Length: 161
Image 1 (cartoon, one colour):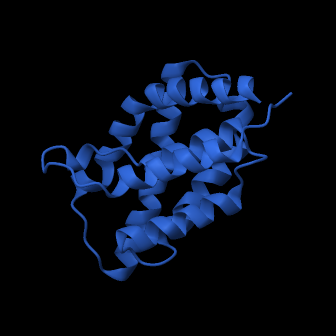
Image 2 (cartoon, helix red, strand yellow):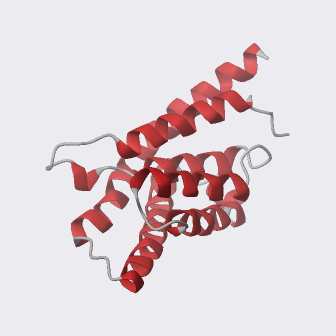
Image 3 (tube, rainbow, N blue to C red):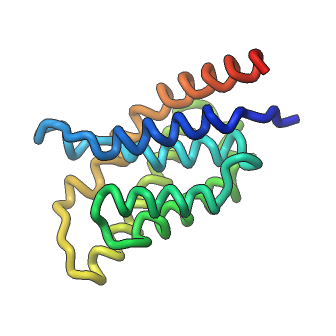
């Protein structure tokens, strides 16, 4: 049985992800910045789809569009696709070993980046290839840390309730 997570925990992780998405990084590290918002969406869609839905993913995408100055709806569409795939395959993904789960997250980030690439291509915006595809590698490397820290946070808040 799925245990309910307090909404403030989800809100806090979303706000931290949005902050990490817009914080400036050194030029050398900028291409490897994981897509923090996508990682948060994947995590909450896997662990608590009752509290974090497709509508939440779309709203978060619109916030990310606004914060990053992207075409309005670009990140929202890409996040909706990732949220849909995550929800559709969540029963399979949850039982994967951590390495296989990290590779699955990398594939989901590649799908996300492909949709951004496709929309950027239609609008004529050019993004260097390293800035487009390196975040998938960064996300796969960071996923075990996200999973461990969010699981610990979730367990901590559930024991207090």
